[in-house]
Image 1 (cartoon, rainbow, N blue to C red):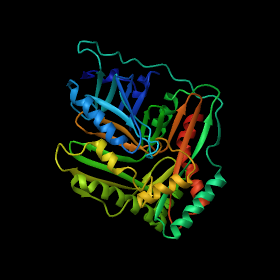
Image 2: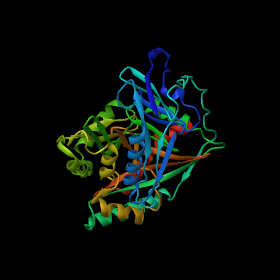
Image 3: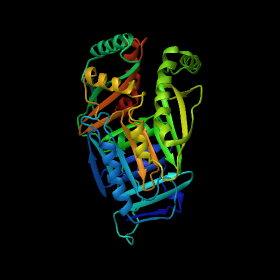
Image 4: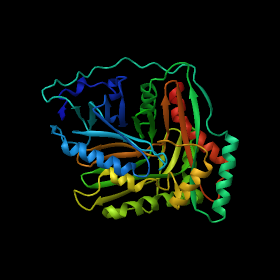
Length: 409
């Protein structure tokens, strides 16, 4: 049973949906103040291995087809909702889907509450502002699987292999480990990320949190959108200088080459599921507080209303060239060989799906895995033939900043 009712007094809502989150299994998917927060667990499914997406789709089909849904709002994000986060690699590929007990959302001036797994006559929960979560204390940072110098050597190895013709591009990631004196409440960095990176999708599912600038796929009433990011330059904080850097990024042959691989990967993956697709010829520059990216929004229309669900589309798109490389199979094999760490759910799809197959999945970038008093941060860079290892390390450091700052403010 899932029941959604509209909040008829919007003034009763807090300034931020995150203010409603209790500590009991909090979940979030927010951008520019809109989206959903949720808590509690009505149902959970864990999948792994190369069939993790298919197994997840089968489980969700069983759950959604047997559920009774009473939805008085009928807008994206209402009714029966499942949050999900998938492992990057096939091995081990550990992934999770969670149906919350309570969901609170807002979109285009409308707000709603959904309760799941309770009797239809059960009262709707009170939307009480929760106490401010405590800030992390005495956080220290240390290299994860590799030092910066060791990672530069791995990048150099990848550049050599690309030069020899083994592949065109590979995305290499590294990790950073943050340790605090006491257990870290994930609601603190979520607040910091949502406030500081409003153009990104701030998320939390099963201890994986972050603020991703990259929308893997959105499916809404048959319309499909995917935002591709590839090609990055660090901001300086000086508007005039940053404007010059944006122009430099837009003309950079290295970054345009990397971006073209990623866009082609997404367009080719969507084509079998869509009756039409639109791919802009020229990318735009997406400005974020810490970096700028080359960006392209690829759009399409699924073949019919019963076409591929957002979960199936996410499975078809993952891993794109933006997080794996080109050719994908060769790049992913090289990642497993030389990267030297388990990505877990970093760079995998994260987001939500409803009972109609609509929903949104981002790529879990600018993200971290939280375990008690320790947080593992991730950052990756696209490596092509003329990549410079020292510059790639600096780019990775810039990509750590959103989560790093959120843990130390």
